[in-house]
Image 1 (spheres, one colour):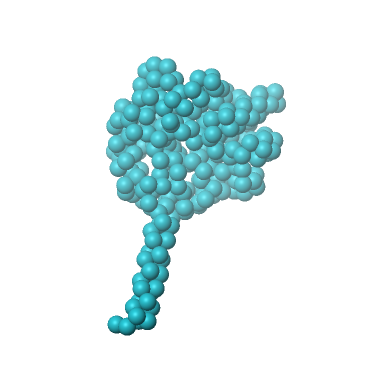
Image 2 (cartoon, rainbow, N blue to C red):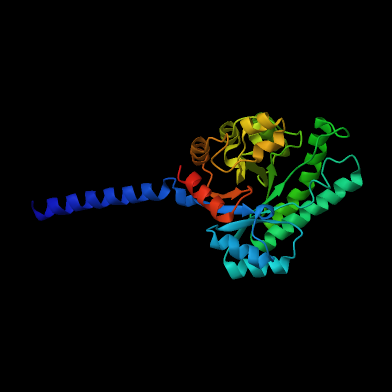
Length: 291
């Protein structure tokens, strides 16, 4: 091979290596997911710092804080442990729902949401978890829909100012039980500052997580990892008993869920909202991420 041929072959080889390298960097990888845990399900006792130290020791990367906590204490513990706070869960959205018949209560709910957004900004969180309302004997589905959207729209300017997104969670509130309803709800709000906090366990009662993920796509801003057993609920005659099962031992098709999340481009935090020992939850999350 002469010098000219050698240089041509070398250039082609270099180009091939660069192309493979770029492809490898853009390909989905388990490393794009981080492990988090919701504050209310941390089993370790003690102060905020002691709880966060235990979470760190178990191998988690972050926590989902509650709103209306002592900010200084949370920030001190965050900085001491190196844990991230990717999400803040509203502490008052059940007691002060945005769908309440009383306008004063709705106003208080909006103020609580705004406080949650400010807490998130202080902690460096990019999203807040919101239960948008509750359908009950006093509130119809249509009223919940209209009232909650009205209040959420009032919070959007602050969310945009702070750079924190509002993420709606699917819960057992008799409201939004299909993926079509969820997409329509977000469409009607019509803001990139409002998306979805998808709970894999809550939805098992009503439908299949994979279909929700595909429908909502990139509008999923955060994910709750939680298990549910239809069989256990049926045997107990109590829907709530379906949650009394460990991760990987319920109805969730975790392999399919992870595949769907990767397909829609979701990366970042998988936040467990599950009872159990921290070490066991961390190990289970590792197994789920590896699927």
